[in-house]
Image (cartoon, rainbow, N blue to C red; front, top):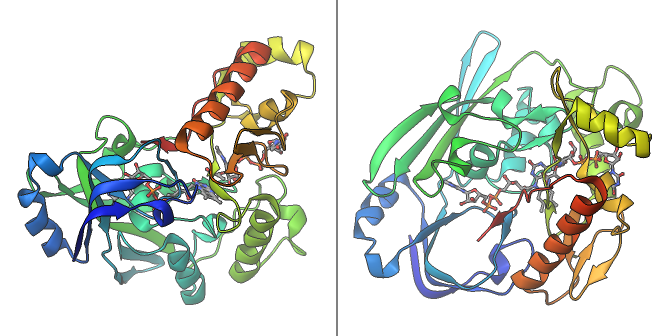
Length: 334
Ligand code: FAD
Ligand code: EPU
């Protein structure tokens, strides 16, 4: 266990925002976590659970305790073609994907190279290239921080939806996730239908390694590396609009791309809306819009959380005025 006063968060958020916290605690096991939670005094509250900080915008120093769950471990149980893999919340997500591909356990390939840790995968319902974590998650184990009581949630309990879960909404700040169990399969049924993926593969029957490599190559070409330019991936979620709204907009913008959600609703790529507003590659103060993916806001060097928020608001305002669509941040603003 680590326990420091006046912790430095600069290297702990992929935006690279300079910030500190009153106290920094890192636990290496569930036992350490259960022993620590009841000792947290009101003087050291509130509590923020931090994974790798890859979906977080810090707008100020944190006035309480930042807790990192560094629980490692992978336990697999095979039942027929199903593989149940229970992972510690502190495992790096992409190490798990690489491990599964190597073992011949399938289902996570499209989620290759998403930054962050296992704990957050169950908070964020991470998604990419037509697959979401909710399709793999079967069980989430956590500790309620106010009572230090252990709880286990099923997939249905978590109310997963596009980049949403109960952990992000009504349960925000209530539970510390310790383990996540994913269901993979020894059968490989690749999902290749997401735009651009098939075109990147040399055959319609790739191996799992080839699929993982293609996803990694597309991501590297499009997304900025946080080690080079601070960012948190997509800053906004893709908005969902009604078919009526889409038809009205298409009269003015016939090329507006969209993806089916259900009978009545479609998803519009926020990157397109932002690009149409002229923001792609632009800079406001020390904050900027990536030149290859307008949905990604970047720290041009020395930006504060307030600089990033000012750019966020300017973009939201322009998109609202031009398209009458409200785009909401995907990143957690603290
Ligand atoms: P953090 O940012 O540290 O935390 C995220 C949230 O989870 C916070 O609310 C935090 O309190 C909570 N949390 C973290 N750990 C725990 C825990 N153990 N218990 C309870 N709560 C916890 N996301 C996608 O979905 N798809 C992508 O394709 C994608 N691409 C990205 C590309 C780049 C370059 C970057 C920088 C980010 C990208 N992201 C993507 C966003 C990010 O990778 C995910 O949201 C990821 O799940 C965040 O993991 P983290 O460990 O860094 O979480
Ligand atoms: N587009 C533009 N201009 C841009 C960017 C995008 O016009 O600058 C349009 C294009 O029409 C393009 C479409 O948007 O075809 C979709 O772009 P892309 O495939 O890059 O995906 P996205 O919708 O921008 C989403 C996720 C990503 C995920 C990719 C791949 C959200 C908020 N973002 O991005 O997730 O990796 O799809 O599945 O849903 C993240 O959450 O941090 C993240 C990076």
